[in-house]
Amino acid sequence: MSKVIKSKILILGGGFAGLEAAIFLRKSGFEVTLVSDRDYFYIYPTSIWVPTGEIEFSDISVSLEELSKVHGFKFIQDSVKEIHSKEYRIVCENSELECEYLIIAIGSGKVKHEGAENFLSICGKPEESVEIKKAIDKLIAKGSGKIAMGFGGNPKDPSNVRGGPAFEVIFNLHNRLKKLGIRDKFELTFFAPMATPGARMGEQALKMMDIFFNKLNIKKHFGKKIKRFEADGIVFEDDSKLESDFTMFIPAGDGHSVFKNSDLPLNEAGLIKINDYCEVSHDYDETGEKYKVFAIGDSAALEGPDWRAKQGHIAEVMARNTAFNIEAMEKGSNERKGYSEHLNILCVMDSGDGAAFVYRDNKGGKMIPMPVIGHWLKKGWGWYCRNSKLGRIPRIPGM
Image 1 (cartoon, rainbow, N blue to C red):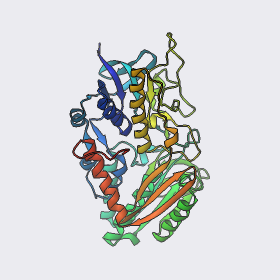
Image 2: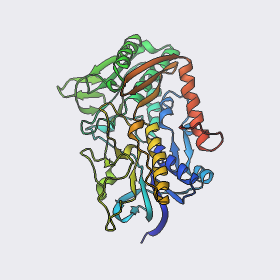
Image 3: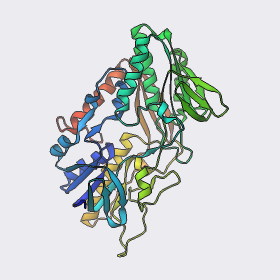
Image 4: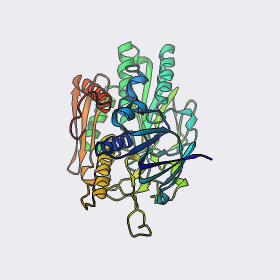
């Protein structure tokens, strides 16, 4: 029989949302336990440089054990199997956990594709970034090849799409091949099932992306649904085929498989329904009180405009708001903070030799080129993220 571990506040997940919640709840003095199946926090936005060898896997992996000592939360490495949220009880592979407050931040699952064994994803398991590098290095050693990179969508929840990293990896690959003097020996193709991938960034960004593709001689394959992936390419709905010696693809997100073994209210895509305060949309318990259960980051079903997208900074806003709201509940205050007013798209899209600043809100979107300096700004953010989380440097307010 597995042991039962009790905690005041239990956080499931050690990504951007879960770690941020743990840090800010500890600032308020709460007893916090964080559970993750990995023993490290992974800085996904900078993983784009692992495939090109610009950074090592270890550079973007931060020990959760070390982070727990810095911030004072308890860390348990274990895999969540069942979530009984109304009972505040979690069944893990090696233990059972009980709590007064539950925060779910284990991310999302991935839309299933036939032949998924034939592609790797920069947004999949962290280890896949290293496998992508190996595949690319093999083709570079060969001296030529056809490489296809792209991302997919989820009509049931369009917010759970990761397109930016796919653009970044192919732009960085172009830059590396150019430096090696063998760019002309490679055929690079960007593919996506939607007619205008990246449309959520705004019309200006779409036009600039088109200019990028033409300037860098990256072929486009848009507007056809993916039927299956094969070892030597991608087959589309009309049975046409895009040949590829190596395929990198980012499936859209959907509900985590663990949510099926739960009593959580889910939307059509299998993501957890929440209100603006990140409270899970449960009925009230037998005392007439709301359940003290929250979902943040990719686990949650975001409400908002059609262009909304899940990003790390939104996950951290949700985490900080949840920490604030829990403290308010403990104090008997009705004050709450919501996430919807903070919805925007904000990123620095890196190309290896520069970057573009992308921003989108209800007023529209814009993309501002930042040659050379943009690349180093994103590199600097990666350094800041790691060291500020470890408490080695002060945090910039709101970051």
